[in-house]
Image (tube, rainbow, N blue to C red):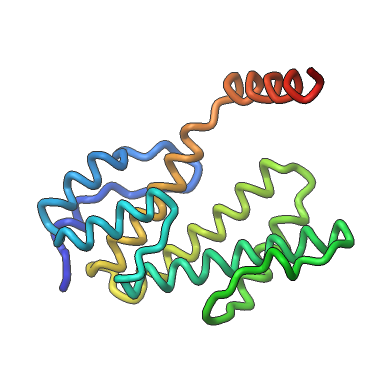
Length: 173
Protein backbone atom coordinates (compact mmCIF):
# COMPACT_ATOMS: atom_id res chain seq x y z
CA UNK A 1 0.00 0.00 0.00
CA UNK A 2 1.25 3.48 -0.83
CA UNK A 3 1.07 6.38 1.56
CA UNK A 4 1.45 9.27 -0.88
CA UNK A 5 -0.03 11.97 1.32
CA UNK A 6 1.82 10.95 4.48
CA UNK A 7 5.23 10.76 2.77
CA UNK A 8 4.63 13.98 0.85
CA UNK A 9 3.74 15.79 4.07
CA UNK A 10 6.95 14.81 5.88
CA UNK A 11 9.67 17.46 6.08
CA UNK A 12 13.01 16.88 4.42
CA UNK A 13 15.68 15.67 6.82
CA UNK A 14 19.36 16.49 6.48
CA UNK A 15 22.06 14.72 8.42
CA UNK A 16 23.44 16.94 11.16
CA UNK A 17 20.53 19.40 11.13
CA UNK A 18 17.80 19.66 13.73
CA UNK A 19 14.66 17.98 12.36
CA UNK A 20 11.56 20.10 11.77
CA UNK A 21 9.39 17.40 13.35
CA UNK A 22 9.85 15.27 16.44
CA UNK A 23 9.03 11.61 16.87
CA UNK A 24 5.81 12.29 18.81
CA UNK A 25 4.40 14.46 16.00
CA UNK A 26 5.57 11.98 13.39
CA UNK A 27 3.96 9.02 15.16
CA UNK A 28 0.77 11.02 15.67
CA UNK A 29 0.62 11.71 11.93
CA UNK A 30 1.26 8.05 11.22
CA UNK A 31 -1.66 6.90 13.39
CA UNK A 32 -3.98 8.74 10.99
CA UNK A 33 -2.62 6.97 7.90
CA UNK A 34 -1.12 3.62 8.93
CA UNK A 35 -2.41 0.43 10.46
CA UNK A 36 -1.75 -0.06 14.18
CA UNK A 37 0.74 -2.83 13.37
CA UNK A 38 2.78 -0.48 11.19
CA UNK A 39 2.82 2.22 13.87
CA UNK A 40 4.04 -0.42 16.35
CA UNK A 41 6.90 -1.21 13.95
CA UNK A 42 7.82 2.48 13.85
CA UNK A 43 7.74 2.69 17.65
CA UNK A 44 10.14 -0.27 17.75
CA UNK A 45 12.52 1.68 15.48
CA UNK A 46 12.62 4.54 17.99
CA UNK A 47 13.31 2.00 20.75
CA UNK A 48 16.10 0.49 18.59
CA UNK A 49 14.29 -2.85 18.40
CA UNK A 50 13.39 -5.04 15.46
CA UNK A 51 9.78 -5.89 14.82
CA UNK A 52 9.80 -9.39 13.31
CA UNK A 53 6.38 -8.83 11.73
CA UNK A 54 7.75 -6.42 9.13
CA UNK A 55 9.94 -7.36 6.17
CA UNK A 56 11.44 -3.88 5.92
CA UNK A 57 12.19 -3.90 9.67
CA UNK A 58 13.93 -7.28 9.35
CA UNK A 59 16.03 -5.98 6.45
CA UNK A 60 16.99 -2.91 8.48
CA UNK A 61 17.79 -4.96 11.57
CA UNK A 62 20.01 -7.34 9.59
CA UNK A 63 21.96 -4.41 8.16
CA UNK A 64 22.20 -2.83 11.64
CA UNK A 65 23.55 -6.07 13.13
CA UNK A 66 25.98 -6.35 10.23
CA UNK A 67 27.16 -2.79 10.87
CA UNK A 68 27.61 -3.47 14.59
CA UNK A 69 29.47 -6.71 13.86
CA UNK A 70 31.78 -4.84 11.49
CA UNK A 71 32.48 -2.32 14.27
CA UNK A 72 33.32 -5.20 16.62
CA UNK A 73 35.65 -6.79 14.05
CA UNK A 74 37.53 -3.57 13.33
CA UNK A 75 37.88 -2.62 16.99
CA UNK A 76 38.93 -6.16 17.92
CA UNK A 77 41.54 -6.16 15.18
CA UNK A 78 42.87 -2.80 16.41
CA UNK A 79 43.11 -4.18 19.97
CA UNK A 80 44.40 -7.60 18.89
CA UNK A 81 41.48 -9.44 20.53
CA UNK A 82 39.07 -12.11 19.36
CA UNK A 83 35.76 -10.72 18.09
CA UNK A 84 34.02 -14.09 17.71
CA UNK A 85 32.22 -14.08 21.04
CA UNK A 86 30.65 -10.67 20.30
CA UNK A 87 29.47 -11.36 16.75
CA UNK A 88 25.69 -11.69 16.39
CA UNK A 89 23.94 -13.70 13.66
CA UNK A 90 22.27 -11.90 10.75
CA UNK A 91 21.13 -12.60 7.21
CA UNK A 92 22.89 -11.30 4.13
CA UNK A 93 26.14 -9.47 3.54
CA UNK A 94 27.01 -6.03 2.24
CA UNK A 95 30.54 -5.15 1.26
CA UNK A 96 29.59 -1.46 1.37
CA UNK A 97 28.76 -1.71 5.09
CA UNK A 98 32.15 -3.25 5.79
CA UNK A 99 33.85 -0.49 3.82
CA UNK A 100 31.84 2.30 5.49
CA UNK A 101 32.68 0.97 8.96
CA UNK A 102 36.36 0.59 8.15
CA UNK A 103 36.41 4.16 6.83
CA UNK A 104 34.48 5.50 9.82
CA UNK A 105 36.72 3.88 12.40
CA UNK A 106 39.85 5.14 10.65
CA UNK A 107 38.96 8.66 11.82
CA UNK A 108 41.05 9.93 14.72
CA UNK A 109 38.24 11.73 16.53
CA UNK A 110 35.60 9.52 18.25
CA UNK A 111 32.87 12.06 17.42
CA UNK A 112 33.81 11.88 13.74
CA UNK A 113 33.72 8.08 13.97
CA UNK A 114 30.18 8.18 15.38
CA UNK A 115 29.10 10.69 12.75
CA UNK A 116 30.42 8.46 9.96
CA UNK A 117 28.68 5.40 11.42
CA UNK A 118 25.43 7.33 11.55
CA UNK A 119 25.98 8.51 7.97
CA UNK A 120 26.28 4.84 7.04
CA UNK A 121 22.97 4.20 8.81
CA UNK A 122 21.47 7.17 6.97
CA UNK A 123 22.60 5.64 3.67
CA UNK A 124 21.04 2.32 4.69
CA UNK A 125 17.76 4.13 5.32
CA UNK A 126 17.98 5.69 1.85
CA UNK A 127 18.54 2.23 0.35
CA UNK A 128 15.52 0.84 2.19
CA UNK A 129 13.33 3.70 0.97
CA UNK A 130 14.23 2.96 -2.65
CA UNK A 131 12.25 -0.27 -2.54
CA UNK A 132 8.96 1.63 -2.03
CA UNK A 133 9.48 5.40 -1.63
CA UNK A 134 5.79 6.10 -1.02
CA UNK A 135 5.08 2.79 0.68
CA UNK A 136 5.81 1.65 4.19
CA UNK A 137 9.52 1.36 3.37
CA UNK A 138 9.64 5.11 2.72
CA UNK A 139 7.86 5.87 6.00
CA UNK A 140 10.13 3.42 7.83
CA UNK A 141 13.25 5.03 6.35
CA UNK A 142 12.00 8.43 7.50
CA UNK A 143 11.65 7.07 11.05
CA UNK A 144 15.23 5.78 10.96
CA UNK A 145 16.52 9.13 9.74
CA UNK A 146 14.45 11.00 12.30
CA UNK A 147 15.91 8.87 15.09
CA UNK A 148 19.43 9.69 13.88
CA UNK A 149 18.64 13.39 13.41
CA UNK A 150 17.14 13.65 16.91
CA UNK A 151 20.21 12.00 18.38
CA UNK A 152 22.55 14.54 16.81
CA UNK A 153 20.28 17.47 17.58
CA UNK A 154 20.28 16.41 21.23
CA UNK A 155 24.04 16.47 21.60
CA UNK A 156 25.18 19.38 23.72
CA UNK A 157 28.76 20.31 24.63
CA UNK A 158 27.87 21.47 28.16
CA UNK A 159 25.86 18.34 28.96
CA UNK A 160 28.60 16.16 27.48
CA UNK A 161 31.28 17.89 29.51
CA UNK A 162 29.32 17.44 32.74
CA UNK A 163 28.78 13.73 31.97
CA UNK A 164 32.50 13.26 31.39
CA UNK A 165 33.27 15.02 34.66
CA UNK A 166 30.72 12.82 36.50
CA UNK A 167 32.24 9.70 34.96
CA UNK A 168 35.77 10.73 35.95
CA UNK A 169 34.60 11.57 39.46
CA UNK A 170 32.91 8.18 39.85
CA UNK A 171 35.89 6.34 38.41
CA UNK A 172 38.36 8.02 40.75
CA UNK A 173 36.20 7.85 43.89
